[in-house]
Image (cartoon, rainbow, N blue to C red; front, side, top):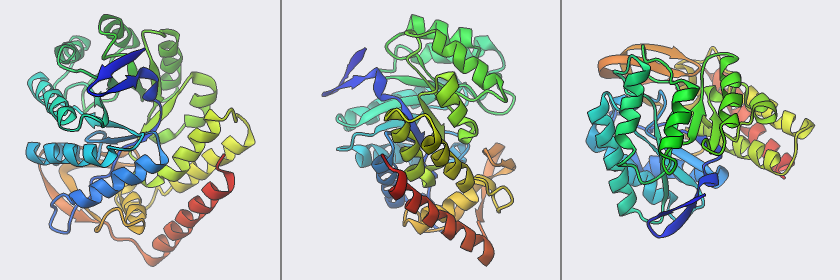
Length: 344
């Protein structure tokens, strides 16, 4: 299946593989560092088949509409001329906001006609039922001109969409729906992934979530064809895992590469959770100039990201000890050496 988007043919099968979510870089005063955002986009596109901005729990709700539009353009310009797919986030507080974001992404695509742009959307923040979720995604079906990846995990108190709902929407709107980021809790994600893959060809691609915590199992046993995770700093090892898998590797080399990735992200007691040590790794690569984050006033910091709610934010700077920095330096060097040794 192919769709004609602007001046290039976009294959449905192109939305697969690891698609890291960018960690928004900020200056010390809390302003978005767009130059570093562009550099980070190009870095991820070098290693992985996809890159995402404006999604997940990277405090993306704390950017203004104007900042979001500028970031959309920044990322689209950065991927132009590469083979990478760019997914831009459409996560509305309500249906009207969701529609506005999809239209903004379509406008971005018009300004960058050779960038391979898709949309990723989670249920609206005010959704409290399956009917609410369906209403939101139905509303964008006639507006979207490109694939929309359904993210099954939404904001606090938002239910997850059923497999049946996503399959029904994919059959009803086959040109825009049928791509799923499956991140239900526990083994339910694996059960649902098998069910979603059984609904092919209406479902085109099922991608893993939750930071890749069971990505190897899901690749080999559940039909996963990629990973969406807020771990752009680890694009080299994620791309290596994918190239090994695509080359037909299913044994020890693939397991070793995955074990390397799990070691890299297993920094559970480091400050600021995921964004803390990831920012340090990105700064080491010259992809951000500070360790500053916008943080929700009300939030829960976990290894899966920062879950926040309410209005307003404050600035926080990650502070690491010399011992923690030394370990992250060693891990970064291990990752790059490993990639050189095992890359197919």
